[in-house]
Image (cartoon, rainbow, N blue to C red; front, side, top):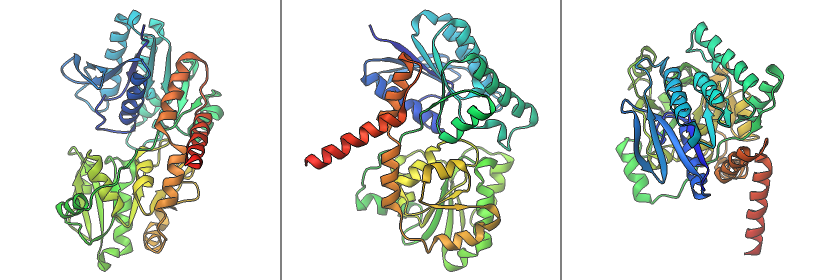
Length: 388
């Protein structure tokens, strides 16, 4: 009989929001292939089941019209569903400590579970103090009441060990496999965005303070590279908020262009691979999928100086500070193409197959070693190559 596994706390699949959604998509797809029955929970006004996606059952719960309360409310509704159907589930994976109510209800229901802790949400500038305190105490309570915790970076793992005195399992994200594209496709995409033959920087991100899009735009303008024909392309406009409208006010000025959010991976890969450099400003969080994607398709990467960027990039890329950003914009265009080296580091250290196996191991034991999985995969890959 198949073991039934629930993936809770995200906006569901197909992945069209952030890293957690992509992780759930990639992991659940592989667990289905291993013989698990996977249920993915998402948010929708239409509660209940919807059409399966690649053999994964989709369960929708209601959230809140308030963006700040959406995760809180949807976690309660997810928890209520799990409690009502508790005999159906063998294991639950929760993503994001903000889902504390649902996580505690799952504990009350007696269903085995693991929690992916996410980053250090209470440090995000967008949250007011009540929300910051909620995130911090949610993390503390989860450390007290949940046996199995997952950190997607070593830096987050070390933080939990030093602040909460809890050991967590290191399981990062995997790297997206970027397939080569035909020249015609590349030409069409660049022509569509009026970037044929243009020199440009790019950032693809949600419009949030902690991702630093406004600071990066200001650094680009201060560098005056637009006077030499360079552009800065910011992709990610979704909803009208005071911050997003402030960003949009720069559109069409000083070489800055603001584009809507785009989830077409082929289009994004073309935009990244033809840029002079990718800018990564995510300052709060662990292993960030946007940075992994940039390493897989860009010539150069500039990332905010911090433990998460250092951990992922290793010896590659250029770490920037806001104080020196204008100067570093000019420095990075003289840097050699690092694309090949970044790809080698990426695919050696971030593998979805190893991620999925580590999640699978965590269901049946108290630990899972992602690093051993990667080493095993790498050994197999190298030995296969040497046979040929």
